[in-house]
Length: 145
Image 1: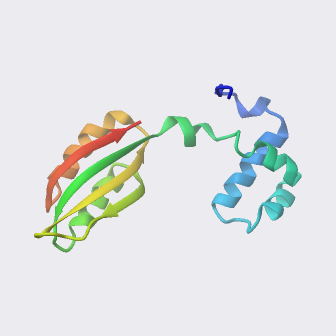
Image 2 (image 1 turned 30 degrees about the vertical axis):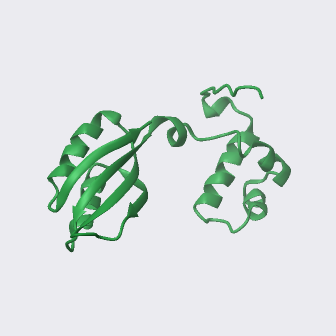
Image 3 (image 1 turned 135 degrees about the vertical axis):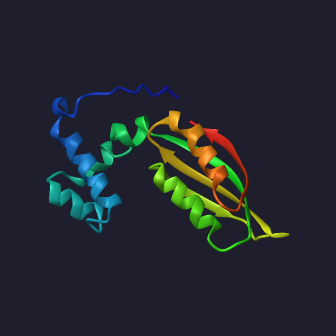
């Protein structure tokens, strides 16, 4: 299998079918259209053109600029603790992608949060802020891309 080669190109020099494919992908992701057929009709490309390019084109900001991180937290089993953690993530402009919480055992629950953050330099400060949240017993950065 041939390795993929990634290229960043100004959208203004791309064929119109590529930019329209990106528009269809956005429309489907945001539920602006109910089907690929309807979205393709709206932007004026064929479904075959959309299917040809859909898995090969991405908006740069979506795929390359922002980085994905995962943190592990141990939280006291008290009302509002998880809400405080989510507020701290929101204040740092982190976009929560997944959140997994265990059933509390002995008064504590583990939570794993995966989030997207635009600036990796902000992660240490965010981890510290999470550790300062009321009811957070432990916080560890598990991964970051």
